[in-house]
Image 1: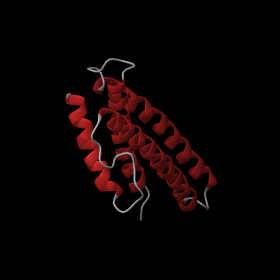
Image 2 (image 1 turned 135 degrees about the vertical axis):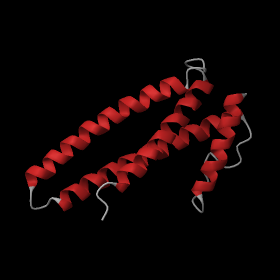
Image 3 (image 1 turned 90 degrees about the horizontal axis):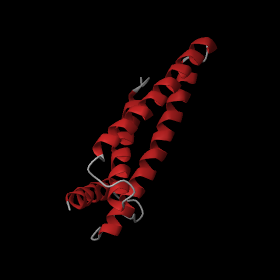
Image 4 (image 1 turned 90 degrees about the vertical axis):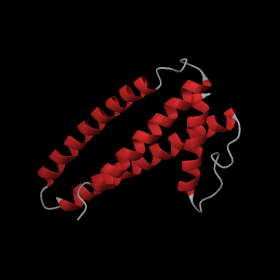
Length: 133
């Protein structure tokens, strides 16, 4: 039941973030199944935004170091390494956060999706802040 309360709270926050966008699975979450669908939707959305933030950052690096390909390549390689390490840390953190749920259960998957979504949102904000002028 603790997980359901957390998921309902997440759905409420997600609904507020959606703003004026189209309807999402996070609208009017009342059942466990709806909460699970909302968590999956949030994970997918957060990962899509993370990918876009990362690609935008790489473009900022190319633009900022347009006259120095070696420096652009070096920084891009460092970002790639950092991104791989961050994903390992995110997965390790989510393994800790989902420990109380039975692996393979819907509650576990929803908790995992929620964790990945939150960490991905945080990472997106960080990536967006790098190289801003």
